Amino acid sequence: MPKRTGIVKDERYLRHSTGFAHPESPERLGAIYEMLDHPSMSGKFTEIEPRMATHKEIESIHNPDYVEFIAGTAGKQCVYLDPDTATSPETYETAKLAVGGVCNAIDSVIEGKVDNAFALVRPPGHHAEKDTAAGFCVFNNIAIGAMHAISKFKLQRVLIVDWDLHHGNGTQHSFYGDQRVLYFSTHQYPYYPGTGSLAECGRGEGENYTINVPLSVGAGDAVFVKIFRRILQPVALKFKPELVLLSAGFDTYYQDPLGGMRVTPDGFAAMTRVLLNIADACCQGRFVAVLEGGYHLSGLAKSIKAVLREMLDETHISEERLALIENEVEAGAGQSTVDKVIARITPYWKIS
Image 1 (cartoon, one colour):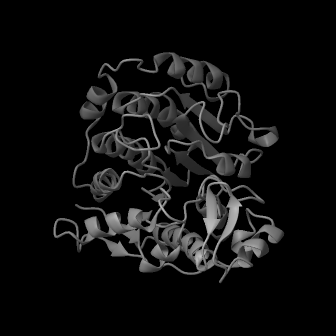
Image 2 (cartoon, rainbow, N blue to C red):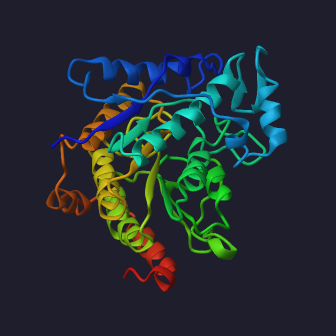
């Protein structure tokens, strides 16, 4: 029986302008929305209406002064928040709509209106820190979404997985001392933003609830599936999340102009299947993906299509197929990184 998959999409997300020739352009969503309108995909999804997030919701992660500063950019032609991140007159409203879209997607999944959901929103969020914008990100959509789930539904364990090419520094720092949120990231390292080393594992009550898997250039489907099956899956099954969230960046796509990884649409589908299996085992399938990076337009659309088809259960990847992908031989296959991460976390998570 097909899954009920919700999507958040809205033409207003195209109103945030990043400037001439900027990679995080409205055309990214344009390509995705065009794919969704194709006869092969249209009519398959439950549309989830976004809303404007409140300042109180945004301030669960960000300083009030920072939120007011972003509000002050409304109507202004251009304000540079960092060298890579600028606002346009409608950025503030669009960023609030991105947060609200993620919160509504989470509500729809937890309340059982849909089985899973993908929030196709912009601007992205995982680099946004408590009091600063960074790396194309204004408000940290997924971190605010996790706090929304914790406060509204009294959840005690939320898993955030981040497969974006770039480490989600803002998300990591939001929950670095908080064991209610397990943050798991695969990313190209060393690379922007410079965080995400193996040694960064949380502090205080949150120690061992941050797991970073820093990867060298060139990792492809087999490496990522191996990491998801040998590290993430056993840890997640011990953590027992009540909600699985994904920072879904597609800049690890093999032709992405900003990246150096080699993931294909099939690889993204396989990683999604591991996450769906975790959600099925732990939390009635509650899974919400949130768009982050990905700058090769046709590759972005193809990869998201593969993820959505897996979420719909149209292309249910079997355990046997996952094992085959995992065991494909790749040059520089990342086994030493896998071994180092397992050695680092095993004393706490006891997965080996």
